[in-house]
Image 1 (cartoon, rainbow over the protein chains, first blue to last red):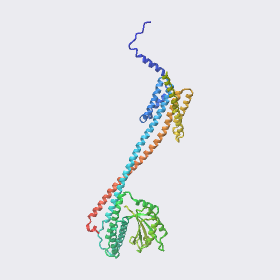
Image 2: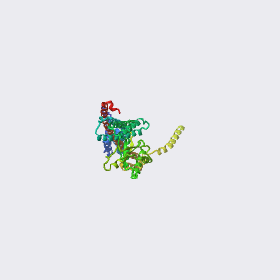
Image 3: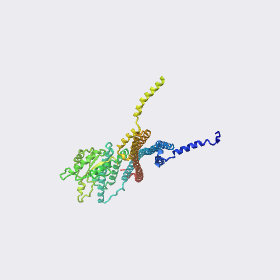
Image 4: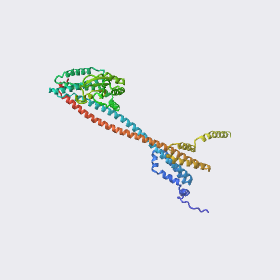
Length: 370
Length: 153
């Protein structure tokens, strides 16, 4: 009885091992399918990725999964099943929350980038406008320079040639006059220079009218260049103030839409009206309508003064008051008229229909920018 | 004895005061049911149907467990139902945010395209400017080369 088994020094550590084996034997039942499913879910790539984007939700799911495993190890399959189900739902929730986090990150990055891109666009737009204005100014300057280059001094020629030169000189003088008048319309506060040029033009025109030989072709060209330069100098500050204030583009579009067939020249935007007067020398209804339309457009573009230029085939000045009135009645705020006579014909005199083509009125929207 | 009575009274009082407050606190079941009712009205209910169906099933099982007096099981199932309902709600939120992100990214692409075009326009304008400057220089050289008396009227 008293015989006891000798106690071996290494026997004690076997007790926990036996206890563990007993426990393992209890939980060795079939693994609940839900627990296996939870295990598979937690190792899915999307779930693993959620650990980074939604760490808190992922940890909650992990906690539930570990609780489920513990319950299984303790032999509580029902609890393990329930906890596994909850763990799967929590993993799925973590995946969805990760999508929310990723989307929020995308929004934040895109938002910042959109703002930066828009600011960059504004800066580039400003730079482009400035460059455009510089180019326009340089091109205008070049044009003025080139125009100012005189042709070689014209030598006396045959009477026939001189007559042709005489006509060309008169045309150039008329163009110069219209350019100088345009300059005055844009800058009415400083009329001195324009008046001096206009006086020069009138003086040379008188001389040309006397058909003196040689024709004042060189002087006429020079005066035209000077008037063009004056117009350019007046426009230059406005161009610098508003580099992209190329309002003539909008005006051109508006007039084209109204089927008035506008075109551009050095003065601005021009609309030509034909058949202005009917046989009884009254304003034709069609032209009256066109003038009303032009007046309405002018009303919406007060920065463009109107220059009404009448061209006649015979050189006799027609009555302009009725035309000016039609424009003003439609709302045109600033109308000035000028008579170009027969010096700027479109068709060669004597050709069939030339007279009808040369009899015309031009409504010029004098452009404040080049 | 007196002290014990006082503690007992206090405990009873606390029980009376706290119990209704605890009863009023939203249980997982109530929260889940309210959320599911709200989600059922969503125009995109089909998108979250998998989750809402599972949540409803968990609630039904919880009821069954309650009737069997398995209160702990019922409580756990209600928590699962709430988790699934919350997942459904967050899924709607995620799709909304993803759509918003895509829209912003599209906006960004457009802005970047415009920026590229603007840079190209600037390059073009620079080239034009250089050409215009060369032409201006040429015209000025020609003008300077002329005798003074020819230039003046």
